Figure 1 (cartoon, helix red, strand yellow):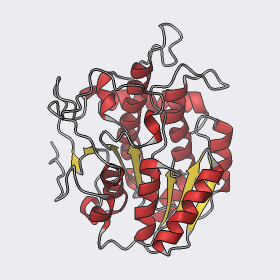
Figure 2 (cartoon, one colour; figure 1 turned 90 degrees about the vertical axis):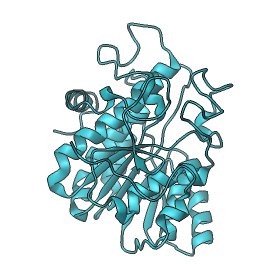
Figure 3 (cartoon, helix red, strand yellow; figure 1 turned 60 degrees about the vertical axis):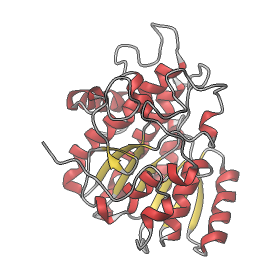
Figure 4 (cartoon, helix red, strand yellow; figure 1 turned 120 degrees about the vertical axis):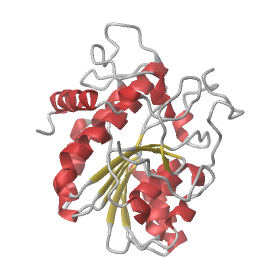
Length: 313
């Protein structure tokens, strides 16, 4: 049994606080969904520490505006914008082909949540396709660039919502049973953690670390645009283990895993509030569910993802 990783930071720590004193000069990063919300704050924090950052987003105009604003705020001109639609595997492949040179940090941040039923041109359910399959194809496609860095870090954003359900291997796209937005979201977020578990195992010899995280509940972002009211399982009082965060606090765990020397060499784990998470306890909305870190589930999902994307071994 490995020791649980802890840091001096917590739920109220900000991205600036966790990256203070860290020098990322010469390190190259990609942040998906970096045009707004947590991704934008994550990108800004990395840039402030000297990193060269590419903001990859579906809306290129918004990504370009974010890049310009971050440069203005930090004085670092090495901020770029690139088009990436994670629901479109052709777009993902084009992005991968366009990348040259080593990649030190990849933050798989973009996502959709609880949207009305939608499908990709291939017939995939949109949340699973965007949150997991698109990031799978992107990250596996960039493996060689990550390996070339020698000590690369991959950060995968999941959610406490993963505790609402496992990956539905017998009905990934809700073709057998009626579509339910929150179960689809839970599946995609469980998949994010399982991906980190399996990638960490497969790529350990390449000097690549892979960790997943729950950023916390942040209603200031565009992620909740399809939600009129939070589901009943959410408790605004925080008594069930969940508390509200602002964007700077929500990005802190991502930035910690992407840049902090405190977690150097740590891989295959799931964090929240800048600490490695405890096991999930029913009734308390925090921690990591057993099925989300199960190695057999992780291996099975990897193999299914290879089949569905055509990317990987």
